[in-house]
Amino acid sequence: MIRVLVADDHAAVRAGLVLILGGADDVEVVGEAADGEQAVTMARALRPDVVLMDVRMPRLDGISAARELGGVADVLILTTFDLDEYVYGALRAGAAGFLLKNTDADSLLSAVRLVARGDGIISPSVTRRLISTFAEREDAAERDRGPRPASPPSALALASLTPREREVLACVGRGLSNAEIARELDMAEATTKTHVSRVLNKLGLRSRVQAAIYYGEREG
Image 1: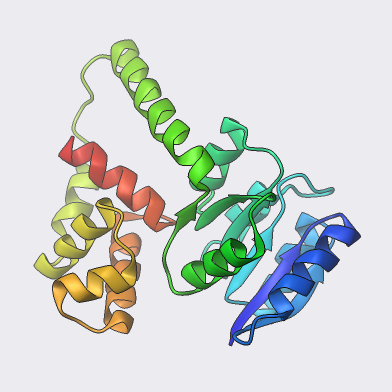
Image 2 (image 1 turned 90 degrees about the horizontal axis):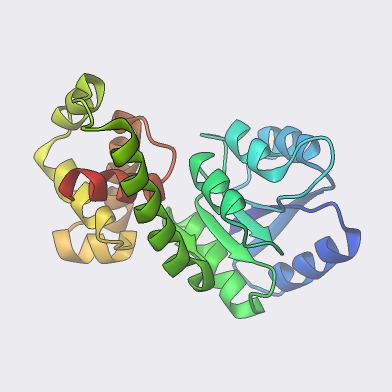
């Protein structure tokens, strides 16, 4: 069973999400939180597989809550707003996914399953803009700061990866899921998930989305 904590400050929204999630045979809603602070407290106590997190909540916003939950549970951001600041904020905070609330029930359940399996997901409606904006910002940053100096920590971190972990990083950089990596590298999916976790830990990254960006920067 995939254990899910639902965090949203609107009771009606929470009820709708619980109804959708509860209708799946492989998903169990273990708790509901009405704000970010409560979400962090409950996640630390309940240890869910996935926290379905709204962004705009009282006391502590969803992005700040996601940052605090690094290593505790995978966070799937679900919001009405596809603002760039929310998308980038969620990814920097280590969220494993970003979806809009107009996502249909089947897609929501699929996203929860993907995140629980160790994969990442971004709403298709924001993916193209995310890539375009990221590239534009990187180009502007390069012009402003000039040539980027070598970063010894990053170089050392990359050098610490085993050959197999480098292969896994390359697959993550290509956007492959754990199941696809397992097939391509001929190993069990559970082993793949372990390798991905080790890569993230060695590189000091919070999510596979950050790993994909890191790989793309180095290869680009």
